[in-house]
Image 1 (tube, rainbow, N blue to C red):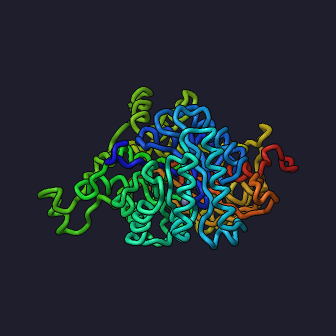
Image 2: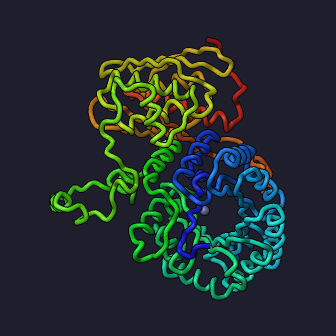
Image 3: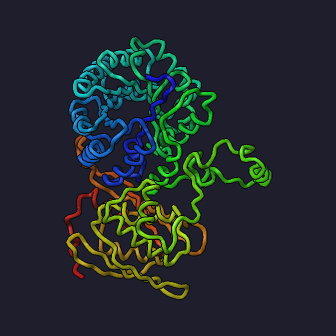
Length: 531
Ligand SMILES: [Zn+2]
């Protein structure tokens, strides 16, 4: 193994997908995985197969269809979890099983209700089981940063003895600070028998804004795998952001002396894709991929940049794949140019999807002079990457104005192909549209977030609407540790794009509703209303 190489382990599809509202369907996951392969990540953690049949299915499809990176699946230290993970990754050319168990006193006592001896024995037994199936086994002592040191060394050493090849040290609750986390890694290297046989990995959360800093501090102490996510998605405040890690290692290679396999030019396209699929937008001042990351407002800075770019810029925007995206295609661009451009941007569409996207492109080109990459992204995410449509929006029509009662009529195609029309009035046109849709679909939910953005500048810009709705669903988790079905509140995001913002709003709502309906497994239920 090259000591100067850092393995980039992407967990966007596992930890990242645990971000509230970030749920992705299998097609979206495949598309993200395909882009991650282009990006050049070494390992893709594709999911947690024991958590649901849908997750298992997604991991299996990624294992079959994505080539290049190692495909990894997560499992608790439970035999059936490990068997499900193996079922998930079995068909991948390169595959890994990742097993974890809590090692902090607080989690062992209150969550696992197991003693230290029991946890040690379980870890040993389950790493051995995973290794009997797969040559590449990663072990994580969950909540490592709050675990008793001596106990931690003992568990890690047992995992190595049973054949774990990567030892991942998670700062599960995002509690650590860089100096302290660095010394944890140093101590583990000094005190764990057999550690030289394994790769040390880190998995940091961003609760105190230190996920990237902690991960990089660990690299200086010899960690050679970093677990991270695109746009820093993940549980609560998220994980270490892949783009920050990669660009820090690259920009400060003089300091870190290590490199990764990541193709930096794919960072920006990947960030955009993940943001549009998850409905979680990237904050404007986000490091590396934020909208403002390369704009200079101060006159002094602008002056400096004009005279010599490096006066105020430590990275080149082209390095992360930010191209001058003003005019890319126009009214007269043909199908071939359109398909080529999408390929370049990382989208590989099925012929049928390509046809639909091309039709939308032509429609837009009639209304808008120049079509940019951002417009194309909006078309693709609006037209192609929508959840399986149980209900399909056929038509929406509103009347509104300062003296009018906002009224909307919508027409949907239901699950059995039936066309249903209904109308409602509301406090505004969007409210009226949503109420009319509710009258047809009848799935209780609450709108918790609504945002609208212009995709590009100009009055003819495409409007992109992102919404999040909250609803109660039966948790059909197959987790053996909490097998009872419970009702949980879940968030669903939806996105829609159109030059007409009312249409974009309706499409965004339909996309969130269809996700919700899929999770509730109510696809077959047709509301008893007649038209
Ligand atoms: Zn995590």
